[in-house]
Image (cartoon, rainbow, N blue to C red):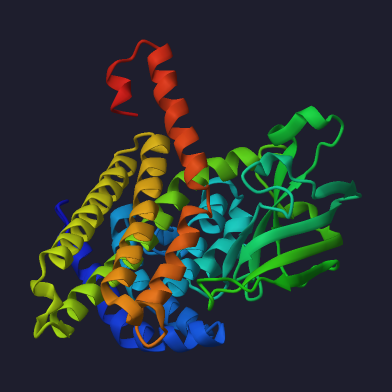
Length: 396
């Protein structure tokens, strides 16, 4: 249920996503998690449904849908399997959105169109082993060599980097002054066939285990000059602008994880008996379920309000950070309560809540930690105060 009115098309998309997720994704989730296995067949099915090009205009072979439709579909996938939702979210946000908004027509023709059709899978490489929250301190360098660029460095935490066909990579093109910082960073379109490109260490993660996270090694990787995205030195600005949208996707993933945990807990509470009665009859369990449902509904409402603001063309930096912060912390809280409701059974793999618990944690970390979101929100509020904008305390 959502408190934000949905159009008939949005409800149809939600139902299509839910039917697919419960029929084709959910039955595989535990096995894929246990084996840390990436299932490429899911990519094929997501592509057939158009779910890998939902936000790309029809002229570039996408569906041209609104943000709310995309977030509704993403939530349904996350309910079934958070790892599959990561794949869908990453592809639909940073790489495709940056190509759409900052790429040339030739780049869009070569990369964006097949990405919209799901023929090429997109990934994003910003972080490095020593550059996480302080991403502007990245060290990967790009130097000119004739018409080409040579990239050298190591990128970290690249989701599905083992299977990506297109990776948008941040590298420092201005190394003349360490104080240049974010202004000296550019974006390059990488493909695995480039000389000097290799996939490095695969992380052994606590959660999202069927979504491979890897390092990308660039050893003098030769990148053709026409693979520079947009203007030289503006790559970090492009990434930050696209993160507003990406954080909405993380919020939708978190809401899906929380919903899965709540649904599993409600079912379990009606089936599990202690003291000759279902534990759902105990007020302590009822209060937990009530609080879980209330926080989940509040998170979804905030997310959809932010998406509606985006569709109206409003600036949503603060609201996307609020949605990401609240939804991810809600997911962690709800999944913790879900494990508690299940008792000892919540701690074993026979029941799905332990997986939801593990999957939830990273949502508070990637695409900006909870601490970073609070910084973004506070800075925006204080900027409104400095402008004397009282209304700006509650609006963007």
